Structure formats: C-alpha cells, structure tokens
Length: 636
Image (cartoon, rainbow, N blue to C red; front, side, top):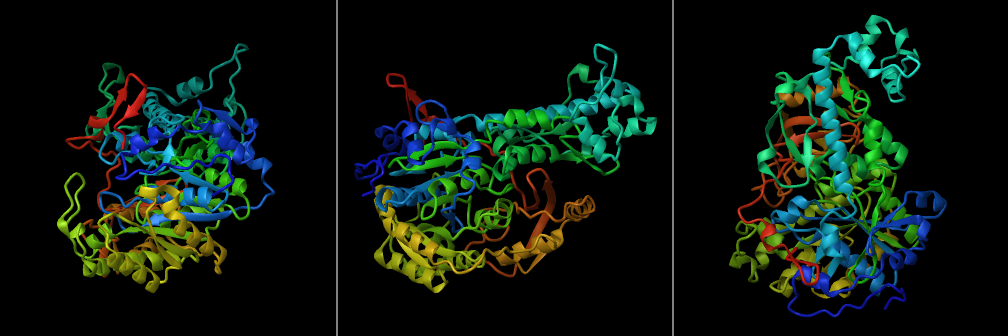
C-alpha cells in the first residue's frame, strides 16, 4: 500500500451502489492536503471551498527546469450509446498507480457540461468505485469556468450584432468619431486594441485625425457580411428549441432581423481556445484572432477587429487556471476545459497536463482522457493537442468492453434506456471475435503514432472467461503491448493494478519518437484525406459548399492549420449504423469551418448537432436535494 498521506482505503460492497451513493459515502480530504502531496504551497493555488482549488499558472514558472513524468492518454474503441467506461478507467488506473503502486500520479479530466448531466448521459466523474469527488461539485458549476466561457462567448455575439447595427445607420466619419470619442481636453485617440486593427490594415498613423477618408472607411467600417457569420450564442443546457432563432425583432433594432441560433457552451470556440492555450499571453492572442465571419469583400473579421479581445481575456483570466480535485482513493485530479469531441478536439487542457507532468516528475504518471473513440479523441490528441503542447505521450490506453465488441461483431442494436438484448448477457465468443476487427483497427491506428498501446477491458459480471480471453488474444495479435482485464468499477484502484503495471512497463519500453498522421504544410484536402484513410475510407467527396470554404480558407492563409474532423462517434465511417471496421466507403464532407483562434479547421462529416436536445425522460427527474443534509441525490 502506498505511503502517501492522502491515500484512502475504500470499503467496497457488492452489488455496487449508485455512483452518487458511493460518492456521498466518502468524506473528501481538504484540498490543501491533496495540494501538499504535490508539493504545492498555499501561494500556488486559490481555494474554492474545502474540496476544490484553482492551481495558478505561475506554478509553471517555478517548475520550468524540472523534468516531466510519463504521459498516458486514454481513448476507446468505437462505443455503444451507453459508453464503455473511459472516464471510469482513467480514474481507476490513477487510483491503482497512486494508492496501490506508490507512484506519483495526476488524473487530467475534462469538465463536464450540464447539458448531458441533466439530459440523457449523466455526469462524467467516472463511476462505481473509480470516481472524482465531490461528484456533485464536479458535475455542476465546479469553479465557474463554463459560465465564464458562456459570458465571453455571448459578449462577442452582442458585439457583432451591435457593430452591424451601428454601421448600418452611420457615416464613416460619425463611426470614427464615436469609436474615438474626445477626452476632457477635446483630443481624440485610439485605444490600445485599435492599434491591432490599424497594424493589420497597414496603417502606421497614431492619431485619428491623421487618417485619410479612405483609411477612415477601412478602419471604422468592418462591413460584416451577415450571411458569413459563424459565431452563435451559447448556453450550458440542452435546449433543442434554441437551435434556430430569429433575432432583432424589437422596434428599436430598425428591421435588423436575422436568423441565428444557440450552441451548447462547451461547443464554443472559446472552450477550444482554453483547452489548447499554453499561457495567458497565448490565450489573449488566440481570443483576439477568433474569426467570426467575413467582410463583404471576403476578408476575415476577428474579435480584435471588433475591439473585444481584451475584454474576453478579462472574463477568462481565472478560467485559465486548472481546478484541483481528488479521487475516491485520495489521488489528485486536475479538471480543466471540456471541448466537444466531435466539432472540437475533445481533450482537457494543455496547461493542466503541463503542470501535472512537472508536479509528478520523473517516474510519475499523468493520465489524460481523450473524448469518444480513438479515431476521434486520440487522433485529435496526437495531431492537434500534442502539436501545440510539444508534449510526447509514451502510452495510449484503449478501453474496450465485451458489450461493444459484440455490437461490432453484428449484435443487435444497443439503445440507451432499453434493456440489453440477451446476446449481450450470454456467452457468444464468435460474436466477440468478429467484433475485434474494430479494436484491431484502433490499435494499429494508435500504434502508428509511435506509442505503446495497452488495451483495458472493462469487465462486466456477464462476461465469460472465454470471451475475455478472446479479446486479449485479438489485442495482442493486432500489436497491442498488453491487454488487461479490469474491475475498477467494482473494486476501485485494486481492480486496475494489473493495468497500472502494464502501463508502467509500456511507458518504460517506448522505442519510437512521436509521429503525426500528416505534415502541416500539405493542403487542407490532403490532410482530410489522410485522416479519412485512417477511418478506412477509400476516398473523400466534397460538397460544393465544402469546396468553396476550402478555397476561401486557403486564400485567407489558414491552410497550414491541423484538421479537426466533426464526425459521428458511433462508427469509423460517417454512418453510425456501420459497425466493426468498414472499408471502401467514400467519406462525404458537407461543409468546412474554421476555429482560427483555437487553431484548427473542422470539416463536417454528415450532420453534427451543436445543441443537443432533451429526451422524453431526462436525468433531471432523478436529481434532487436532501434538504435535511444538504446533499445532492440522484446524480449519475
């Protein structure tokens, strides 16, 4: 058993109680104790109550010279709609490393959106005896980062519509006079942020009165094309009725009516910026560089053109600091950022990983989770996140379940909320073996990056020895470094000790450098086609709209950015119904969009919803407060 002061021995019971009952049965340690174990002193963090703290970025300056620990990413096979326990495995692995194998370890997780928490999926704190606590605080509000993103996103949205409105009613000179009002002495001046736009326009003058009429027009009139706008408002709730709305219907808006809509907050580009930024200065530049649409002349219009980049940074200044929490067994967790894994890159933040790698030091472990299947989350972790962070993982874990493999082998459809078919509850080795083609492709794709791959099989009580053995054999035959059966949901870290040992060996025996799937200096289409090839596609078909956007982004100078595919998580292909490892299909690219501040181009494969809807019976039916104790009940 570990000698760490914060390690807590769990009293597990069977059958496994509900997640919230387990979370409520364990008294969390004061977060200062967890911080102390990582050699963090009170100057390094700000307390948010007893069980959460914001770790300040200044820590990075202090540990700059120290060496990193091992870096492990957790992805999965193509999941069923029930999920295969990727977060649970990430937490269980860390509990095993910290509480049973006496390693310094930090878990890095995304902050969950309230949309799924109250919707259909539930929370994202892990499950069973492998969870982050306090589970209710993790899933609801946390330290307000998502609220900060919501506020910043909507400030920018308000700035866009306001600017279009004012430009429609004023002359160039009147616009300049209002943008640069006179001070008490009657002198006009540019604010600091305006010099960014002047520089972009090639104007070196320092006083408003020096501008020629032509320069006044270029500077003061953004001339935004409303049809080109890509920036929408956001809120952190699943609300299907906000997907398409009409704004500007008030009498004061003088007929400035247009159609727009809401996305869920975690789909905001500001969330993707938070996840990919490397410092406060870098975040300021990324926020200012976000492109909200084009001028009527076809030039990109940015947040800094609107004069709002600095204000966005002020709203985000606390959100850039990761939140420190703990697992059920007292090992440390950094929770930070929660970008969508389909339209964004679906990974927690670079700054959390960088801080964690320094804090655990050589021989320690940082385990970070990538969203959805490895074809989406791990691919984006490697080709986007690792490019911007400069960090190199030594090991990738791929989480699999017998249930999902049976589905990929041709089993009946798995539907959330409906009982599983008997095929999933009784032994069928042939079905499992047929489904292992999905696992095999994920292994070969992930190995191609130069990391060792360890398969973690989340064991359920209905799984047979023969089925588990078939998965292990198939994984090793496909090139996995190791394949391990895990029971951390039922037993906590003790159930993932073998996985911890396998991961440690995989990290210690890595022999290749990190390799990317594509070089950045190839064209947008070449990069899309490289990723499509990893899915098994034989070709790519571009819509007229996609062709137009690719041409425009190339012309605007954005073609050297990495690619972030927006695709269903339920298949390697664009069709969720195509299970296993399909080949020979043509991948259709419906549209291509850009998150210039975050730093990627995202092609849309098929139809992707950026605002989920609530089901007939959402999770909120079960969520309530025990008013006698003040404890949350019913969270899952």
